Length: 180
Image (spheres, rainbow, N blue to C red):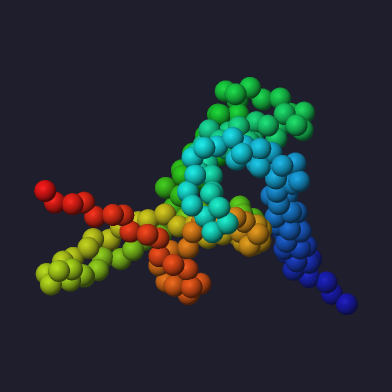
């Protein structure tokens, strides 16, 4: 019996990649510690928008920084503010640089960041034909873990057709100004 060593090696590589992907996806699942710290950070935020189940905090990069800093400290990992800021910026810059170079960046379980090209097209807005030039735009496709977390997340107030489908009332219109 003859065994194709190249095929066996290729199969082993695929299995290792799948196992690595599964381990990577599991490693981004929020831990109980991270969930607890996130609730503490959110409780200190005063910027909110209306959600279906109450106000939803609006989180900025500084809030994310505070959350990561707290998590690292809780796990006895010491980074200075400067080191942590440089690390976070490096991650964001790496994703942007790779996208700019034409690559799609996939973080297993979290999602895929990419740049998508929209072809030149014709539009007839307001009765006048107009050419819209080709343009690139950012795209994010959520991964499995992100979708699982989204299923249990506190959500923002639904808009438009979803609002109608759920049978929710439209928000009250602002009162009209009186003319003098």
